[in-house]
Image (cartoon, rainbow, N blue to C red):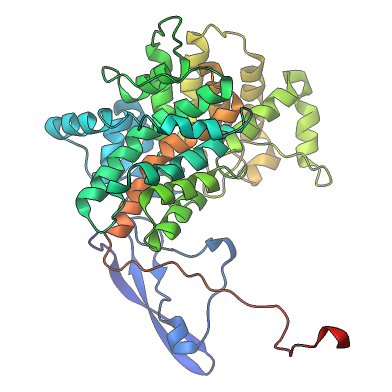
Length: 434
């Protein structure tokens, strides 16, 4: 990756009796950054930034978020344009290669992904080691990590051709593994992929087809799920993406890195938020109970929190939520749910959040998780599968970020520092004298 950052002056500090000068770089979008990589060498001091909220861990050219304006760009393209005009595989190519594909590039990429969707036949035996009631995300963590044992011919990260093959395999096989995790969870036989179906249609077929009868793809539902996949594809240096990069910085194979990302995504504060938002709407139940829960949300002494509102990055309306809201209505209409109590609760909650001074002052706008849970439920997925679908989509972003890091000649193994506040140095005392 060729660096695009430009020098834009210096930042001057007076620390420990020394005048320190550090370079300042400008980005294509977003704030300037102070390069503190030489700070320890010059001063013997570290910086402290819990949660890395003010620290850029890398230079990236993939995704940009402006939380204040509610903007999300993939390689410069607004997310709403891609969700409306593109599809999952075209957007995946964009994230991986930096540009939208021409017709020939698109045809070749789609062929490569389609003909990598099968998994090794012995791989299905791997699932028998899990309990039948295992959470699908637990299965995903183990199954994806095991790919390196089945496809060890594409784990040499220093070989560009092996990196390319591993990339295609990961994107192609993730829907197959996710569908297998779902089938195992519900106690149905695995369904093999079909090469005459598109990426998202194939996934839905593997999830919902049964040997007893054919499964007919509903285009409205497939298009909505494809949009969900695009919306979740990447989101800058979030917790799971940072985990993938950190694992990859050690030289770990890509399958292991993605398994690490899945493990991080499973956290309820990250990928599990849409499941939590749906459960909250189900708990509220009806519109007439909303005032009670709004009062609880405002009560500092009450542990209840409104899930699906606010975002660590977005301080405006989540641009993905706008797309998701429209898709949600289309899906509910397509499946015949015209008077959904959950949707009525969701719409009323959204109205309150956009008008109530308490929420407006705190920038607690509805985010993508608010609507995606209802949509996925209407598509036929149980809440336990929500984060699995998130992982399926985010795999593209993880792979793109991993690929960018590996191809950056300046990348180093991650090694965060700390401020130690434990016991001071002391001498060992024999157990008889303690």
